[in-house]
Length: 171
Image (tube, rainbow, N blue to C red; front, side, top):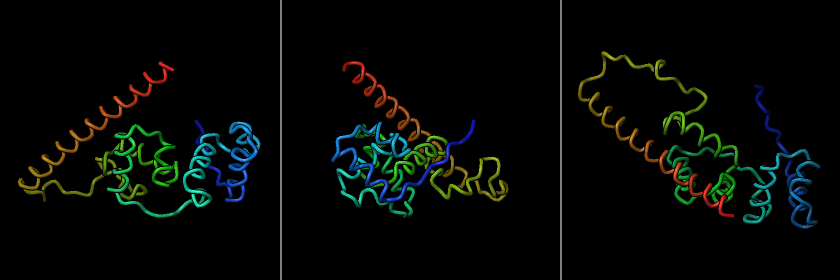
């Protein structure tokens, strides 16, 4: 399966597309087609513009700490927010949040550490003989806590998804 490449749209084009939806009353789908924009991106831009004005369309390139990323994901789950709602609330690019969610699901909080050089478990640079039994106990306790946190978040996400699905079927 071929990986789809993201197209970066200039600010002028984003603003023009958003105004075509909000001021001219064109449908999001027709504007997305006209400008060759992913409809999800356009929905996100419109929401960003409505909340933050034109500054919401300017992508801020900054680094987020692991704790900030975790806070964003926990807020998304606990407040039952969609990816777009979360992106708008925190003024963070939609793709970043998608990526964080995927890495958190795969690797837990360690997935947020320098994703470009992430190593698999069998590639760790640790000599097992150099670890003391006290360190092993601490690591086992931390591992157990992280597994519990992971399980909790997965169950919470499943409950939130079930609630969304039941709300959709009621409508």
